[in-house]
Length: 126
Length: 361
Image (cartoon, rainbow over the protein chains, first blue to last red):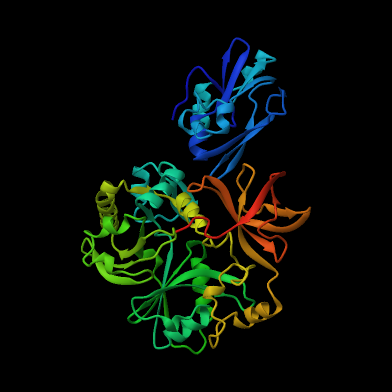
């Protein structure tokens, strides 16, 4: 189970990679393996602003469906449009090509509410 | 929690395990879609030892089976199997099952989740018949080998010509020197076999690994309950608890072909005759989504803003690469040209009827 050290995590199994005030968001390796074969990633394109913890889309796997939660507040600046035709990339590369949205983080302090790799590892019991 | 004799193998293979009908069972080993495709294109094997095996012996075995099942078991000769169901007096379904005619009785193969209920139901319905009913579920390992390459995979492991087995027939034979009932049956729509045997854990694992080794040249895959579900759904086969249950009857579920209303008597016959005379109120039908999404059990179906039914099963079909489902529709509410809506978590997804089976075999 991959849990990169340089990312922050939510209890709902999203990760965020922070570069300056830009955050790239996706779901963890653990999340994709629990969901199994991912069929659709349905990102809420009507949204431009997200609050921490707000739903920004849903992810449909063969067996189940799950909401996606924003790790921090901010303005959405990019959706990963390649997921529309190729959702299974989330299974194959959850921390790379399987990213979902990029946001301009409105308050970097909110990152302190997130888990680091070690705490996330403890959460999933690995 | 109960464990099949192959549980250690599932753990070794790092399967994703879940509790199902009291057993720890694999949902998938690598991916539902890959396992599904292996069965459609080559061969896959499943541990389905959680299924129940109930044996009925005694001078009145046939009479009793005729009473509790809706298909006509008198048509069976030893070595033949039949798909059937048990109903309550009101026509609701107790369970669907396979009836195997043995030399000296019957083996009924029932759903794991219903096994205890079924066994009680059978015992309760013995009146004046001279029968013995035995629940042997815990003694039997059941391996399903399914797919176009299944016969080739098994041919060197069994002590008879596997190609001699016709659809829905079985033989008492041996697999690796272990006595087994080997039947040409399955839940996938492909050429396939189900192998029932009694053995210790070590021998069960040996048999599993031998099949795996023999199927290696055909890229055999170990398959979990996830692929079992998507494979059966593409064929439009009913799953108890999803598409059929005590609140549905076999006629509306499309199981009229196994409901032999011309039989002298079976439990539920009167109610089903009445339902037939009065006309069905709803029917299980297949549909596909036009929009993206996956229909889920319990989603409501709307047409012109009227609630006309509900979804019983749904998946993204790996063969068709589109979302498909089964659901009950009020009679005459929609036809092949209608575009109706499935309410999925508040979102209305457009859908239309499609033929069952969803794939052409």
